[in-house]
Image (tube, rainbow, N blue to C red):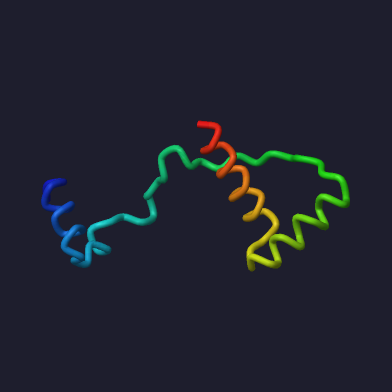
Length: 74
């Protein structure tokens, strides 16, 4: 199958799941790296409040906010 045929199937909404080896799939540029950041207690409480309002975890909130700022900084 050519990439053009694969793209056509995907674009047409056809089921392509059987054509993908999900066990070896990679997300280029999205490799995770663990970092440690220390926050004052008041900041952690505030982050938890904001995360709860949005129905996400503290970690997800921090990632969303950092991604927004980094994209805005361009």
